[in-house]
Image (tube, rainbow, N blue to C red; front, side, top):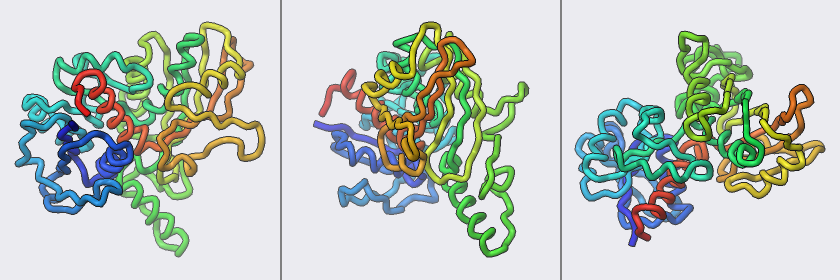
Length: 341
């Protein structure tokens, strides 16, 4: 016996990826519905490679009663309106927006890191999916934290334009084409030209000088991993279509060598260690696209601090950073609580 599953925001990048991953992982489904805004009503959407075509339904008229799980990839605005309605109807919401992440009554889950926290979903019938850049980082940090206890993390991100949705991807493509033919490359989605450039600005600026994306990485890591861990982040948008990269510097309470860290990461869930100290012996974002894993490379000791390591972390942000993590939460929910399939 399977579940009745709704994907909300099914016509967007993440919503389509959720449908693909549900099919790829053969999630036990009795019935699947694709739901989006009124302008997408009737749109045909493929359910992975199953051959099944879903007709997109209007969120304004959709009744969540009798459905088991709703994967939301609709942004904070629609989520604020419809997630509580779904939850009240008895449908468990797994939300990809930032709306509920810091709500103390909503668990913020990365299954490889804090699976036990999912038990708190009953307070609101809602589970939050973390920020894309946070998700891959905590997968890398968790096994190392268990081994040597992390004190402080300094992370610089190299985030792809797909993190800004289809409009971000379109802008990179159009600007690149325009530059080659000598046309203007005016920014629309981003604050400055993204083609052949990098922009040290993701989301809005806060009063203390952080961007909201940087604040999310700090706050969410503390909630998911350990509130005692100190985190500082610089988040940068780069001209890559899909795949987020991170340069992570870690300071530990206890001694840990690069070799020990490599051995730990090699066996850790959700991680693929590709770390050869030679030309090409590392993973770049273009190589991670379409993969489930979080890739770790360039593990090395930081001689400037006691018990320090540096590493390079790459993952498909539409997968582990969003859709895959949401489906993994649904799988965890099924194993621990719903007991179907």
